[in-house]
Image (cartoon, rainbow, N blue to C red; front, side, top):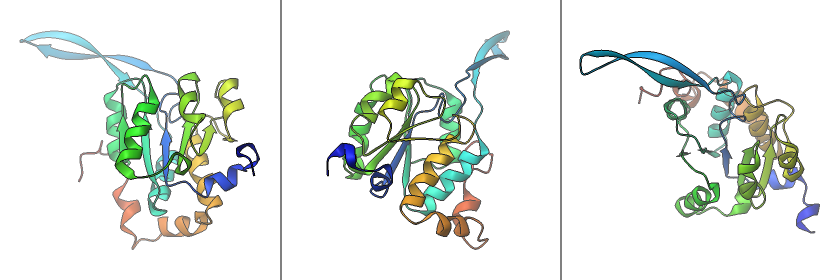
Amino acid sequence: MSAAEISAQDRARKIKILIFDVDGVLTDGSIWLVPVPVTVDGKQDTKMVEVKGYSAHDGAGFSLAKLAGIKCGIITKRISETVALRARDLRIEYVYQGQAFKMKAVREIMAQSGVSLDEIAYVGDDTIDLPVMRCCGLAIAVANARQIVKDTAHYVTPNRGGHGAGRDAIEFILAAQGLLEKCTEAYIDEDNPIPSSMDIGKGGDLK
């Protein structure tokens, strides 16, 4: 069977690590710069703070992935404290910001984890994501992705970035691995410690 003939479900069954872009994937792509008053050397000043919006559905999806034993990562070109805070809240294992060439981060993740490219899935929306999507095991495009990205993807999510696309990607992989129902039941089990420890809205402050 050639690579072109391998179904998205077959690819998803091999996945051990799921990596996401941020802007346009875990958010709707909007970047808000909000002025915040600060005091510098005793004088009042203003600095601009970057604000993003994230989907609570995606947050629950990261808990499902952890329950399935799938590690998650973020690779983004921009550098933002809100990304770091969200990643800490969700206990995301691999976080790379300021990455203009994302395959460099992917190779580092492979070296750290011992996984192969066939065992990595990547979710993207724009041309910067193409180098990873062209060689990873499972390439996923969000519904709002550029057409060239959709044409490269093995699977396109039904929802847009920032509106549950991340959850779509996670559930697609878990369903292919036969783990979605099991992980969903574990998520609502009050004796399971993972769901209660993740995405509690404290900016990653709680250990």
